[in-house]
Image (cartoon, rainbow, N blue to C red; front, side, top):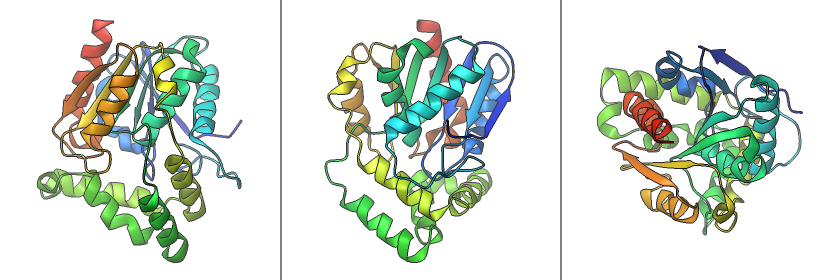
Length: 254
């Protein structure tokens, strides 16, 4: 088992939060503060991110799902959890829902993708990071993560700075392996076999994983529900209240 950095807060039904590539568990600060009023919130750093271990080996998103499953088994005491993943966390959710459905009450897949038909953008990003470090791609990434209008506000400026700090603190070699794992996903067929109740959330202004990618996920997963937030890629940071409202409305509908 890969040692993962974990933060547990609140009491009630368990929610596990799985963050985006290049972020860490603090990406969820706004959402976690709201959810912890009535839930046990467990958030964690993916391998190669934040305070988690960085094993020196290639891996797949399916391995991230294995990491999440081991965490749930340890932290939830056999209780099925609500699993909420954004971007790479949403990819983890797709793999986990197929591999270990017995661990889950439901999954939420936010601002994510099931497949990248053209991986040249990922290959270019890997090459830049290998040549110049994570800081070379940081400004462009944060510009995609949050809408320009919100970044211009005091709250958005602070959030952008915090996200940039998370990204540049990410180990370059681990970030490269994470990019390779993300570039290699293909859940188009396997999503059709998911039986766990699913909510798919898109960001209406998301340029990194546009709404069409969320539509593909929702159309493949049987009985999946779909919702949208007027935000960019890291919608949970930009619109935490709206994000949590979508979660709680979904859970009440089950």
